[in-house]
Image (cartoon, rainbow, N blue to C red; front, side):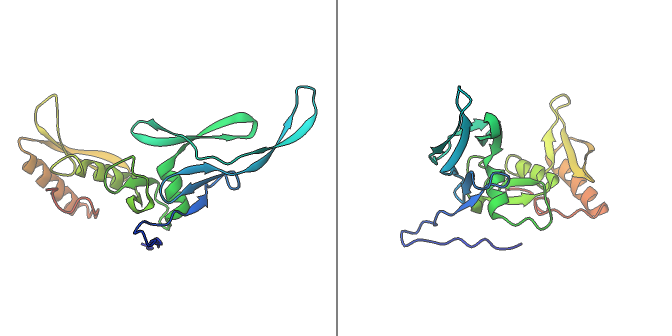
Length: 196
């Protein structure tokens, strides 16, 4: 994995760096701190009388909104069409290389509001799911099945959720999952040890 270089100022804080948002180059930028801004630009418009004119639109820091625990920003494109941008994905696309073409962006500390570049990484769908469970459960891939009261062991394998079984204890369910991983030669950094 390529290391991200962050310049530290004398104050001990990282320097804020701005990069274009992919697909909105020259109009919007995102920073390594997860801030989104519009750039100063000339807008061509038509008056009510049908006359063409230009006006200067100032650049501003964009307001962020919360949707399903993630921060989003509304970007406006041609003819006032709105596009909802997920801030964490924009930061990752601008700052983090993705040589394996992974499709998800993971918040390393589990805090979905922390969109700093140091807290983000590209992961597969399976890795993202396993990481989210590792932050909330003692064992990755083990949850309490509400209807039966037993411990359910599951895993994401070959782009499918696989139900391994129901067990009387968390440890039993986790052992079944580990056995499934070994039998199927599954390697995942979030699956190797139980979470403390």
